Amino acid sequence: MSFFLLIFKSAFRNRLRTLLTSVGVAIAIVAFLFLRTFIGAWYGGVENSASDRIIVRNKISITFELPLNYVDKVRQIVGDKGQVSYENWFGAVNPKDERGFFANMAADPEVFKMYPEIVIPPDQWKAYAEDRMGAIIGSHLAEKYGWKVGDKITLRGTIYPGDYDMNVRAIYTSTSRAVDEATMWFHWKYFNERQSETRKDHVGLIIIKVNDASQSTAVGQAIDKTFASSAAETRTESEKQFQLEFLSMASALISAIQVISGVVLVILMLILANTLAMATRERTTEYAVMRAIGFQQRHIVGMVVGEGFVIALTGAVLGVALATPILKFFAQLFEKQMGGFLGNFDLELRAVVLAVVVALALGMAAAALPARRAGKLKIVDALRRVE
Image (cartoon, rainbow, N blue to C red; front, side):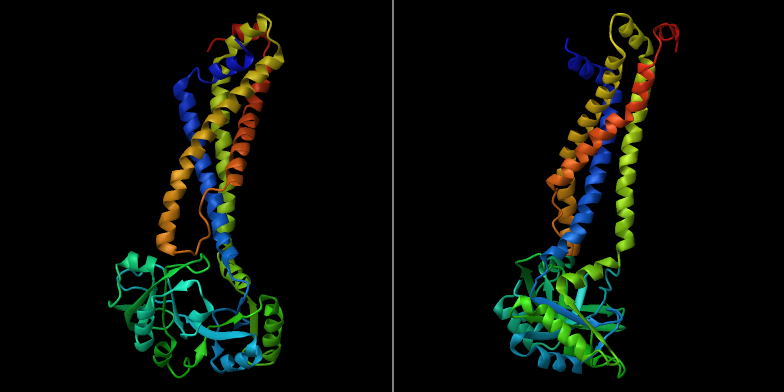
C-alpha cells in the first residue's frame, strides 16, 4: 500500500465524521463564493457604464437639486458636441408593496435619446409621448407587479409627497446591462406641475451624451467652471464615476461583507482543526505502533497534514459543485428584483481558484498543531495511553 493511499484511507476511516466535516467545509466555501461574487457584481455593474455619457449634479450632494435654467446654459456650453437632457430621482413606492424598491425617474423625453440601449416599440412610444400621465416601465418591473400596457397605477411619493396616478404606456427592454429593466420613467412636466412653488423648476441630474467620448473631460471642466461662483455649483463626472459615488453610500455594507467573508474562512479552519484534533487523539496508540514498526516522525506528520488536505479538498469540490446552482438561483432572483443594477452574478473562475486554494491551505494549516503533537509523541507514552 502506498503512503498516499494510506492517507486517503485514513481520512475516510470514520466516514460519517469525514462526510459531516466535508459538508461543513462545503457550506463555508459556498458562503465565501456567494459573498465574493456579490461584491464583484456590486461593482461589476459600473463596468457596463458608457464612456460617452456624463452627469452634471449639485456639487454638495446628489440630494441637492439644480435650477432648471442650468439646462439651457449647459446646452450652450455643449453646443454641437453632444445632446443634453435632464431628470429627477422621484423615489416613490408602490402603495401595495411599500417595501419593494425600484428606481423611478421623472424625465424629459429627450433622456431616451441618451440611452440607445433602451428598446421601446414605436407604437408604445407614441402612446407615451401623447399621454401627459404616461409611464414607461422595464420588463422585469412589469413582471414583478403584473403590470401591462394600458394599466393605471398609483405611486406614493416619499421625497415628493402625494399620490401620483400614471398610465402604463410602454414596456421597454434593454440591450445592455448599463440600463436595467426594473426602472420606471414618467414625464418630468407632470412631476413639475405637482410641486410647490419652492420646489418647482428644479432638476436632479443633467445628462449629456457627447459625440466624442474623448471630449468628455473638457466638456465637464467647462461646465463646472461656468457655475463655479454660482449659488448652486456643479460637479460633472463620467457615468462610471457617478455610479461609483452612488455605490459608495453603501461602502459600510460592502466592508462588512468583506469582513464576513474572512470570518467564513476562519470558521472553515476551526471546523477542520476540530475534526483533525479528534482524529489524532483517537489514533494515538495507532501512531505509536506505526513508529514502533519503522515509520518516521515525518511520516506521522505527513499523514495528519495529508488528512487535512484530503478532507479540505473533498469539501472544496463539493462546495464548488453546490455553488453553481445556488448562485444561478440568486442571480435570477436579483435580476427580477433589481434588474441590471448588479453586474454579472456568474461564478468566476478566479473566485473558484481562490476558494479552493484557500481551503486547501487552511486544511493543512488546521492540521499543523495536531500533526506537531502526533509527531512528538514518545512511543512508550503513547502505547500506555488509555482513552
